[in-house]
Length: 374
Ligand code: COA
Image (cartoon, rainbow, N blue to C red; front, side, top):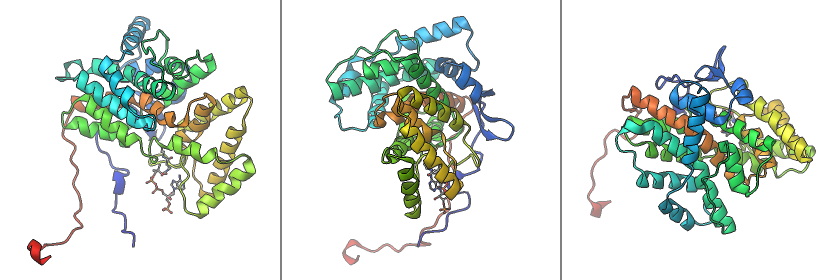
């Protein structure tokens, strides 16, 4: 028999610390990063501007922005030892595991030491992420060794050009930027909380990020965009999607990309991603995947009263960009690295080791029995 869930299981609804980085679903505020509404950032900002704002506390002026962009570009280079490791990671490895290894290896080669250069460490890890994943992908899948230190003006555009070997359209590069902005920060979600717990022991930034990658990987968290794609690509019409989802629900299956631990009515990022998925589908000349997604959303609202979260339409939108499905969650990593590292610095600035209590459910007293008598 399934055990009754403890009151407050999953720490749901409990305040576990302070943050000035984001509001997630707060009444009258919605989703904001340092007070800026996500809708406005997705319309007007570049990802680099958002990352700077999260990491340095304010929006950059022109000269700060130019300097920051140039710095991130210079950090796109990968050390030879890291390239060698990436060359040895098998093609069959999940790209999230590649990032986990890449982040950890970077920490071996460029250890953080004391925390006096923590901003530099955060910038370096952030800029290295697209290089790590695309370097490995192109080597393992196409046998090519690529030069990651490109002059592409944005991280999103750089990622797409490294992944495909072609210059992305303006529309594709902009959507990638928007998706990184939407993924950048989200309160004490599971991966960010992992990073903060790690930081609270005064561990180094690479360990915090490596642990966060492992946490993001699961389908209940960041892995949902990949899992959502696996669901929608099975259907070749609205009718099939309607029937298929109803069947899955009847079998008590979870539909990835729906529901949320904090939001109760909607995920404010969804309408932005949905509009982009529609636009990208139209531009591609094949909107089937978008239509199937819409049908799944309708069924989920009608049957379960559940709303799509940011990962659901991200699946079709990334697909329209030509991104292979296993690379969806690594894009979440690239965006969220800005939030993770900003949270690590915030935790360090006002630290107390995170150590909750537990409710013991084991035996009262166990009697020792010698091995021969067991
Ligand atoms: N599909 C079908 N049913 C779902 C569901 C989904 N995506 N999400 C929640 N439910 C149902 C649960 O089965 C549960 O029903 P029950 O009370 O009959 O057992 C109820 O809604 C509450 O769900 P629960 O998993 O306990 O909520 P939670 O707050 O602990 O979890 C999520 C939140 C996000 C983990 C959960 O909604 C989920 O697993 N979603 C799919 C994964 C996903 O998209 N993750 C990305 C989040 S941004």
